[in-house]
Length: 149
Image (cartoon, rainbow, N blue to C red):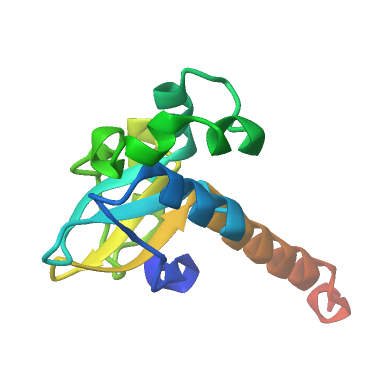
């Protein structure tokens, strides 16, 4: 199985100069936890995670009531709190390699890049979903009556 088989294609991204408020709105509206950050040339320059935001807001929670009323959210650009130069993976990489990179680096997503262009994003949820589908297929095969001939 390859990264391309389980990634989310054409992820929503945000420009590094946009305010944190815009990123929060995108994350909330789409129920995302990660947002690739791009520069003006369309190149990946970072990743913004809910963990980055919680650290910037000095809060263990990202409560809508809190960030909607905070001036810093409007003034703070995404580039100020993003994780720069994220670890990336290619769509042709084995899923095992993506999982290894996430485990070794204690991260929960990888932007998927082909020729310096972001083509997707893969998260631990994507890997777990793929694992579950594979597990169910194997289980169904093992329980198949044809298997017991």
